[in-house]
Image (cartoon, rainbow, N blue to C red; front, side, top):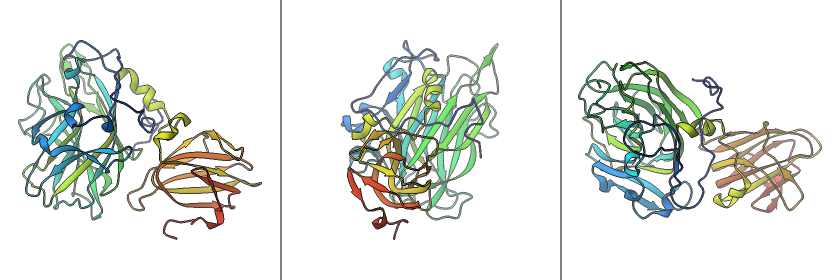
Length: 410
């Protein structure tokens, strides 16, 4: 396992939870490869503000009609992006941000975050593979970034993708994460395939984050310092820093985002679907700031972007507690109707839903006569505290802590 603080002294890669309302936000930054006239900093994609995936992505190759917006299936808001994979088929499609389409240079580094869910009935045959995410891809320079055409030569395409697979895992409710990369040092004609060993659940939203930095070039020679990193539910699960993709500064990151293909030669054993929401991207000039931000602290001005809020208050003793949420939870600050002021602090630890119990949790060791505040999506299912909390407020209503389940299912 890669330690979250093992590189660049950063605290872990995640954007602040939630998306500001409205349409795509574009801001310029100051480093890039070829392909455009402007430079790119960040983009937040709000599916609710658009009618068709082609409004926000280049939907291309395979079967573009398999991508559609679906109401009522979202992680936040009302609308999710869905990609169907019919039984017996191997093709999905691509719905990715295409930087030159908006007149931007190709960034030389790209961070992405999204919430993703495999359908409830997701199933795979043993050894099958399904790609679902493009961390970075270039086809403008050539076709060597896919299609089993052999090694890229440094000026004719490259790619970094992620997949789920039934390899090296026995749990029927999860599948393994895998990395799939076309680079100059791969051994075979197809890209290099690496089983990451991080379980991906079915039927549950998981937070997925990727970071790609292009390798440097010295006198037309590719240096082995290209980087790919990946986080699953906030935990670093993949880190590699020796890729060689390019021998020219003009070939950089042309695409990023949802990319779906089941198999090489395999076909889907049933009708399957993958859902996407809250897709966010940022480039070189913004990446460090984003990585340094606390992924689980939200400004109270964003309160309306969440389903509800929680306030806990302790009595005259130090109190350990855990809040279980069927959904998503972040720390925040406010003053409530009972005069409590909450402030994010280092005693609180947030964990997204794990792959076995399926609940997001907030754990803390709170000082006497103190209060903590949270925003959440979904529902509050249990609160466990020792000693018992003095007060518990959910959505502005005071609840009797003794009457609230201390474990999910009680």
